[in-house]
Amino acid sequence: MTSPLALTFQRAFLQLDPVIKMWIQSKSNQFASVGRFGPCELNSLTQEMTARFGQTASAGNPPLTEVAVNQVLQRMKQQLASAGSGASPDTAELQKKLQQQQMLLQLLSNVSKSRHETVTNAISNLGR
Image (cartoon, rainbow, N blue to C red; front, top):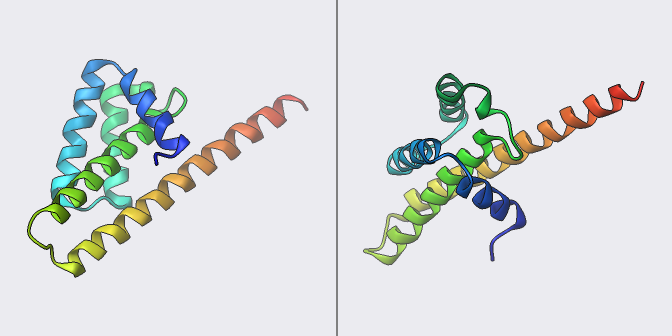
């Protein structure tokens, strides 16, 4: 079952400009093929996205960065699933990838929470 947050990201991705969508797909394939996407990779992705697309990267609901991270996670899940359907993968490697995925989900959750708190604080400051 797909979570409501994942559905939001999927809808946001489908509505993106084709150039941005193609760039995100290429980046998500790149990260999925490497099998690593941690804080350093997120920082690199965010910087490249901001340099390439400017304020578009942080605008919208959800922001383009979160949509891109979701796409990377989806690609990595697909690769894990396809690895499981072929020859039996190395269990330690599979566990490592699953752990990285869990860390990414936590990172994405933290980014969303931080964004929510920032918006909430800004709104409360308007009322003063």
